[in-house]
Image (cartoon, rainbow, N blue to C red; front, side, top):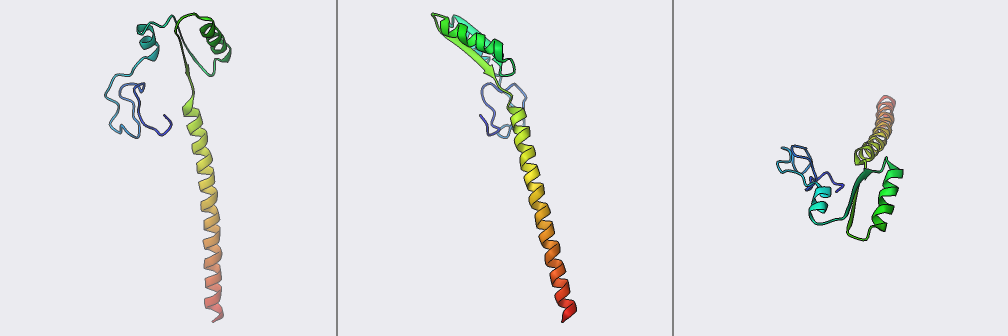
Length: 115
């Protein structure tokens, strides 16, 4: 989920836009759930650990039974990058508006002096 909502995998007592008082439910551990469902191959990794993740996927494809591979991604980094991009653009826009208002004020001030 990318909109800031909490989900069944959100850790207990974590805050999100849809849980401003904290998540009060226990999170699902998807790997344990897959094991309980009978998966014969279960792996968990992150996008940072690319080579082990690649090996996990290859082993999962070679497995004759049900395979479950959970790959965690760093959305916080992406959100921070997008937020900084938004703030830079917003700052640039506000500076442009400030310059426009300053120009407008100077123009109006000059008109009053000339009359």
